[in-house]
Length: 355
Image 1: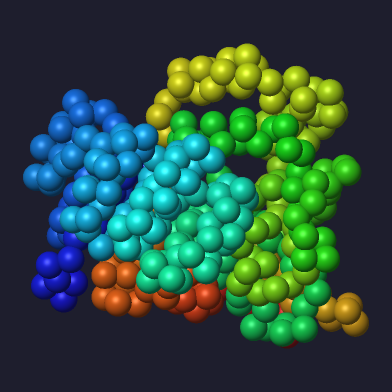
Image 2 (image 1 turned 90 degrees about the vertical axis):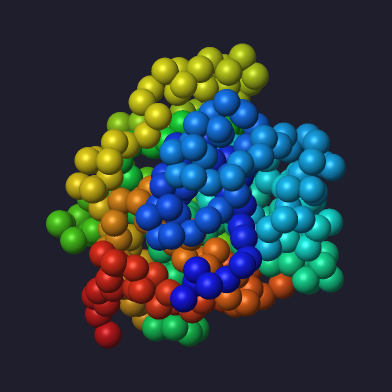
């Protein structure tokens, strides 16, 4: 039914790992996006594989960007690190009245979009960053926990099963080294003095988990207004290494030369998980809400592998935006589509652990 629509959308950053995967999935679903990005040669080859139109546009060319966006109703922005690419794209979307979707997991990008809520409403534009694995499943889980315990004062989210990272994701992690571990306390985002740790049962007994400044520290508050939020990842040697870095080591790693060296090392790694690794992979997310009386609810959410899920959720949200389900202003996935949105995807299911 969606194909009957003449509306179009743009995938910007269609030459990156996730952008290519989304383009391939769009083709399989019979969608016809306009592919865009900086590198004409790479765009041309991807567009040719799928029979899509393409336009080489750089984010520092506002006129070209506006001309490209004026041909579409929504952009699915997949070119990270979004700390650098999000603002020029949001600016252009507000100028052209185009709905903005991206696949970021970066706290600062979510907060920057939230700060432009009024501006977006006036332009009739929806800003919904985080329409992929960051943060659709965890955001729906946060809203689910809030529905189970409406007077919750404390929310814990935890994620396991993150396998290979794409270059973009890895670079984002490298960029965040200097900020320390960010958590939300009394409604405000703060850097933890010491990285929080705890044991979490993802379904196979308690596992060590390390707090990380993940996107939900920003978004879960907008979705639930629970004042205290901490996000954990199941521990890995790399995460332990980052968590154990002292202030001086973090400062050193955040300097330009070190950042460039670390990012160069990322470029030499595989681009992201193979199709076989994605098929075999899966994630389990854990949610816990506690109220002032100490009453506690816990749930688990099982999902397919992260990049696979990103292609599924981002394109479904694009489709809903094209079907006039967008709400102008800054939005989170659960605030528009509800907590159960995630369960509409194959391989996603809840498990309430008590109550």
